[in-house]
Structures are given as structure tokens and as C-alpha cells.
Length: 163
Image 1 (tube, one colour):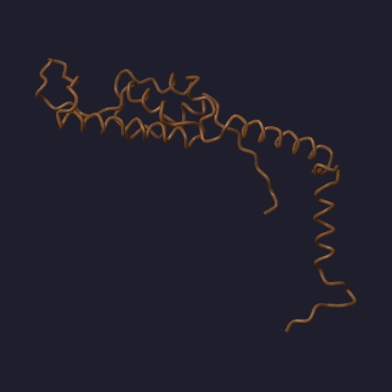
Image 2 (cartoon, rainbow, N blue to C red):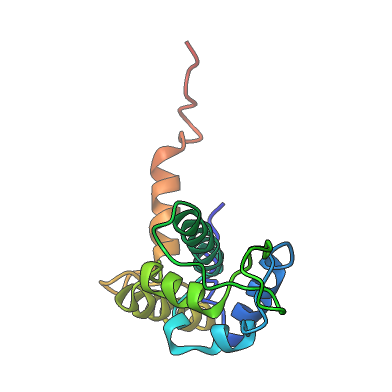
């Protein structure tokens, strides 16, 4: 297809909805506020895939921390409500895990690429209102496509032969 479709990066509200949707099957700690995470300046420029990577990295941080505690490399800071350190506490993602994830998950679209895509979107919108898309030399791209199509199709007086 010859259609170009511009899909902008998600807004803070969109990121919150994405995080909530993908976090439905994950145990989150009581200190986790997905709305605050989505609105954080650290999440600016995150795509939906970046939000998923953030949650995945935070989950891996939980598993890593638990493995370090199980092997005795790190003290167990989790205790249940009664303070019994020997009882099993279910693993859950905390804000500390999200902070770790933010340090390791960078936006997949750079600010430079964002600006380039937005310029392209604006140029396409202007061209659509004028009736065509122009290349850098002021020629309409639709005209160029028509010329290519005319040159590649057989003329009416000389049909192509199939061998």
C-alpha cells in the first residue's frame, strides 16, 4: 500500500492506560502508582513497547533481588505484617524496582527522531491540504509516480510479449 500513517508516541494518559493493561497479571506493591510512573518525566518519549519493557525490567529486578536474598548475598528486607522474617512474602514489584527499571530502559525513539517524524507529519499534512506531497525539489511525488508508471507500462501500439 502507498499509505503513510503517523502514530504519535503515547501521552501520559495513554502510557498510564498501557501500564495498567499490561500490569493486570502482575503483583504490584502498595507503593506503586502507575499513574505517577506514566506522568514521570523519566517516561517522556516512551512508546507502548517501552512501557512494556519498563514493567518487564522491574519484574526481572524483583526476581534478581529474590535470588540474591535466597543465596545469602543480600539481607532480606521483606517481612510480613507481624514482622516474622521466616514467613514467605509473595514477590511483588515495588517503586524501588521501577526506579531500577527506569535506569535501564531508555526510550526507543530518540528526541531527534521524534522531531524528524513530527516534521514529516507536518509536511504530509500541508501537502494533503495542497493536493499532493512534494519532494525536496518542489516536485510532486504523485507526479513522479505517474511518470514511472507510464514509463514502465507497455504502450498501446506495442504490447509486451510473454515468452
